[in-house]
Image (tube, rainbow, N blue to C red):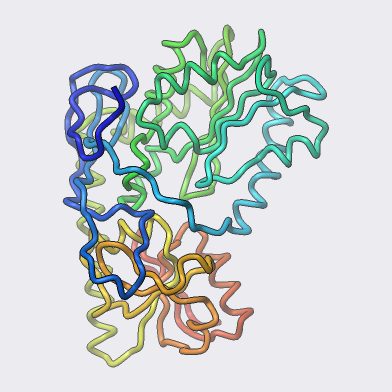
Amino acid sequence: MDPIPGEALTSCRMCGSTALTQVLDLGAQAACDNFPPADDPQPDARWPLALTMCGACRLVQLDHVSPPEEVARAVESETLRRHAHEVTERILDRLDLPERPRVREFSSHHGGSWIGAWTARGAQEVTREADVVIDNQSIIHSETPDADLAERVAALADGGMLVIEFHHALRQLTGGQFDTVRHGHPLYFSLHSWSAACERHGLTVVDAWAEDVFGGCLLVAARRGGAPNDAVRQILDDEIDAGATTPQGYERLRELTASVRAELVRHLEDAKGAGHTVAAYGAGSKSCTLLGATGIGPDLLPYTADLSPAKHGRRIPGVGVPIVGPQDLVDRSPDEVVILTWDIADEVIAQLRRSGLETTFVVPLPHVRVVGSS
């Protein structure tokens, strides 16, 4: 039976255990990929948004089924386009692969595609019997991940390697990245929970390392046979030390979430009280959760700019902040710009400065940080 949107979770999406414990509750929030026209009078639908941890496999996941995803309106950042080539080079340098590997990619519009970078290095794109199966931010958006993992394993050749990149639950926890929690992204893997999933499908995690995109991802390689290397064992130890494998450890995320909420609202209220003009940059999925969970609307952020023309004239769901183009932001020249896409803050700030915007930038996570105009 297909998952029903809004239905409460009663068992783990990956291993089926019913031992679930809620670890973070962000209340009812709008679907973060549904950007209504700014003048649409209809209220935005809201859905429960909370995380629960499986006591068996330690997978952190949304505790309700997400609403159906809307058509993607995002524009891929320069950071992600560059990352596709850089991470491909790291994989080829680090893993024991054939000189011209056969590659199958399971990609997502959230993470872009790496296949062009692989074929540029001589790889052959195939649909089965692959030396490398790549999951680039794909399975984390699935409501039926165990079946999807079986599909990826089935595409492997003998001796093939499953390579996945996902936002690391450890970085989410230690960085207070509550805005990475969103509808349509039901799964938040640690290395512990991904290793457990792989083991159920006959794979062993043999290597893993950190990547900086999206605020902190993990690149993990698994295959039939082999043993975890020192890097894998170190990351597993780090997760235990940080509390990423127990519900009690997620008290840290709840505390950091409350702190960022209060700090950002206080900063914007102080700016408004001082007569400063303030706007934002970014209208991605993080923006929706960040503003929705903090209750920040047009009274504190009159508008936000985004590179995607498909979002212009629309609004951030749930909070009603209008979305304009980057040139509108430059032309209005506010005193402060809050970078809602904080994970690519350096790219955004450089882009806006090249466009002639001289202002103060505010990066909200992992804590409110003010970046001067030059």
